[in-house]
Image (tube, rainbow, N blue to C red):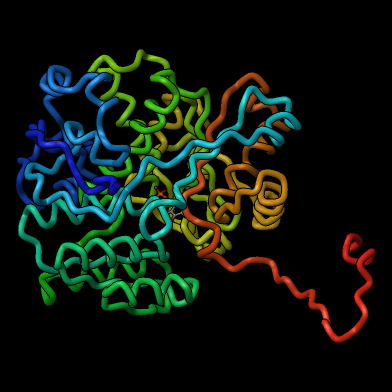
Length: 416
Ligand SMILES: *Cc1c(COP(=O)(O)O)cnc(C)c1O
């Protein structure tokens, strides 16, 4: 029997307009948009009373376990424009042994590595590309640290849209090859992701492409929002106490925060919110610096360096939206070193059998640090985000070999 993973429920969309996340200025739906006139991200607004009348928890129960199950809260108007490569609801897995060791009420991992192209960038890009298809875009471009480019390449190829991707030259080889193999015209650039973003922005006129940079188009947030919708549904519409999110551009954190707001307005959840924790790497922590300085905007982080490439983002255009969610939720921002990230990855792999990506491992390292300094306590239920499959990243070497022509000292195997 085949599961119809691609099937999106037939539904009208409830989008009313778009709104500048900073000034509140209104923009028309059904038109191509990048940033607002204030140079800030746009947020999609819905007729939530209409959604409330159309979507119930029971209706949801009978839908396929895919991202399109939340169709009424998503922006695509025509079902024929909902592309798909099989976006499952990702499992939220307990970590029984580590939770017990930590004396915790529960530490869970939302494993996003199981999505198409192996990362949660699929959620954002499926929405951006579906909307681009709906609005007649023929060519898309973006800067990427790897995973976003891979997702855009795949969905663009699926939708018959041409794609251009620019990545820092030290982006892991596997990501660059994945992007190119999935059909994007791909370049290594001698700079950071924001330097690549400049090339995309400045090439717009000459190339006529649509700039799909993080938060510079309105729909990636809507796709990432489904993480919050799924989490709420998976927790029986009673949200966990703390969410630890590895934060680069912050799309997911902002998206989940928006999801909770919309869920409350349609009566699915109450006013309780998780504390939102922005996790960054010590080698690139602009949000942590801004948080600690009590600021709403973050300065660019110079000489950014970390093994967690997905969060190596020196400057985020949605900085104030990240800060607002963190502060309003009574959360915090925290940085961890590459060394503890690697230690955390090893610990989770060897103890729970889950191979996290470095960004995901950073959330576990942050959990441990925050338990130690008292910012998270034992009776709080916590969700860590593993944003990509660990298989996309360099791993510690395995260099043991056996010579089958020599006698084997079996007892020695156990001591290795
Ligand atoms: C993009 C990315 C992040 C950061 O996500 P944002 O929502 O842009 O902050 C974290 N981890 C991985 C693996 C990523 O690819």
